[in-house]
Length: 176
Image (cartoon, rainbow, N blue to C red; front, side, top):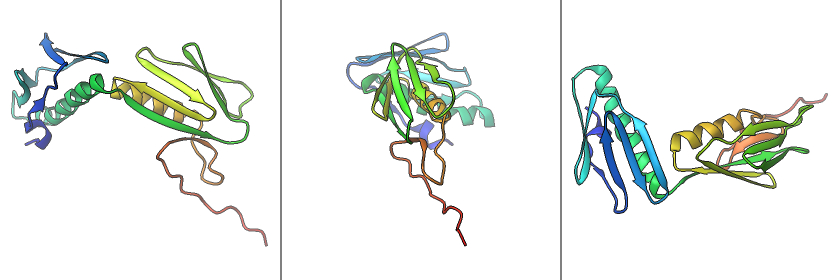
């Protein structure tokens, strides 16, 4: 039994949740989110949202808690946007937002240009990058894609890291 799936999900005031044809729509003050859900889990919307398993097989039970978490994240996202912060460390490393694109100088022979997806707002002040949006999955995957451009290295700590991430430093070569 899923501990997360068994719990009822509260719907805060000002947020409407509707379902039609396998598509769950959450509308709130910050925007609208839509997500397609399989019919293996029955989603019942009343004053609270309850989820139940259609068939008692392993696949349906695994989706039960996952779908509950997705719905909670959608409701929380349209209420208060998700935010991730990155810190770019290193001499000569720069980040700029120009229009709907990120422009990075990451020590390569060319600038790295990354388009910002729809539904995400991004700011870059000095070497602090802030990414916000109402879709938790989109914010997390875009932030991870940007971090993957220049991962932090363990000797000097240069590269791009999350705001709360701690880089384990290694000791360099010892001279005789």
